[in-house]
Picture 1 (cartoon, rainbow, N blue to C red):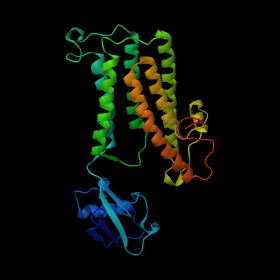
Picture 2: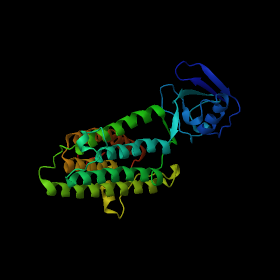
Picture 3: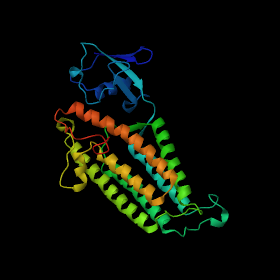
Length: 304
């Protein structure tokens, strides 16, 4: 038997008396959904403590620290959208918004520059790199990444879209501006930055493929990622989240290539956020695996 209470008010929402001991949390969510149709399973968070961690859908009732009558606390996660729609919004947005500035559609800059092109090759190269980066993200989302949850809260999508769309437009405005000036060291600076950018993109993709294969074993075969024959994965010797290391490296190289202050600022913000994620993942690995390599740090080899 399972009693479901509101996590905020402690008011009883329902009492499920036909719950088998081997039922999963996902099964309980489905039963709860029958009583409250507007709260579909993806919108539900069930906890054993009002301020505790949400239970995973695959957790089994009889394995939880509860008595004959389990008390669970319900939290409404709000409207949810599927990942396909999420990433169409997040990644196609920056692709299109950047191209609007690159092609200088009317009313963005002065009318005499409408539909004109920049005389600087680095501007075109930057557009190619930016387009490639987000196209790669989209392809990885569809064919490579595996997500533990099938949906994302609508409020998070709005926040993420504002971040990606807004920064993409801001970067594009300055890089494609008629008064934009090329990097100080000319082609040498651009070419070295391009080499670093390509290497980081290849490294990021290699790490995502490795993580995809790792997750293919399912929850029972969980293990921490290890380097393989691919040289780009050797960064696993030193950091727990080399995908973030390569991502930051790609944006650092894009900043050097364009020598644009807004790009550098965006890179800094991205580095701060990815460091937070990497540290969290690093701590989780240490807690879960007793034999986790002691040499590894979160995101920057030997430093951070």
